[in-house]
Length: 324
Image (tube, one colour):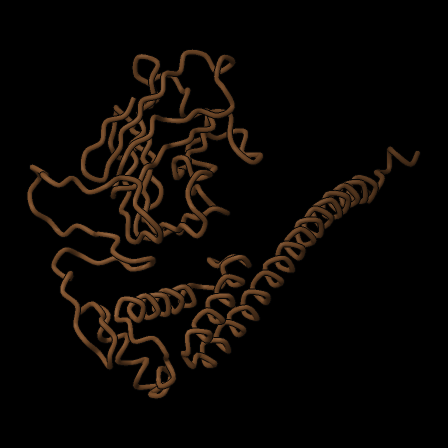
């Protein structure tokens, strides 16, 4: 059972006997940042980590979400030690800035806590046969619709709340008023980005055919979302993301926007991703080969040490009594 407070979710798993545990346990669905999540535990480890408790944060019902959804969040997971806060096992935080999508709906830690520590007598992790897990989630961006509509009559203190007002754009309540920029109705937060686009490509919208301001805003938001996608590291992007980016460029061109510069960037990122994927594969192969070589060196060293011992044992002078 979990209890949500702000951006935290606490989950207690009852553990009586390891042999009775399922290979995978899921928490109840909970809401943080108007998105539905769930925690997933692998009490017997995940992906060959059989000596560890594995914990992951997963987008709930991700299979039913519409195509193209993406969520970016920072996560931190803590296995609470009730004897000492310092002995609690915490992973994630500022470095765990993750993109969740259809291909990668969950992120977490395969080696969260060694099972020998979890089940250690008087180890502090188990109390009354239960282990307590606390997840902290900071939702940074949502592409697509939120799972939960914002409450109209909230009794919570007023704070900056993000709303999804367009296909790919997230803004705050204080930014609902639009401004005109070269004929495009945009949000105040978008002014600097749009200004830089026109500064570098002054004629990119000179042949834009539509006069409908809502449609023009849609095109501009689509362009900004596409640029934001390309600003991610190649490792974060999937081949499907880049294929959709190419389709997106064609969509903008058909609308009359001159985005040949953007098309070149898409191809450039595709090449970078290919290099990253190929390089990572080569590094993995070299790492495997290095491990084999290290093992071979260790085996040779053992044989050499044994040979030295044999030589040392044989290289002993005989005494007079040994000879006669």
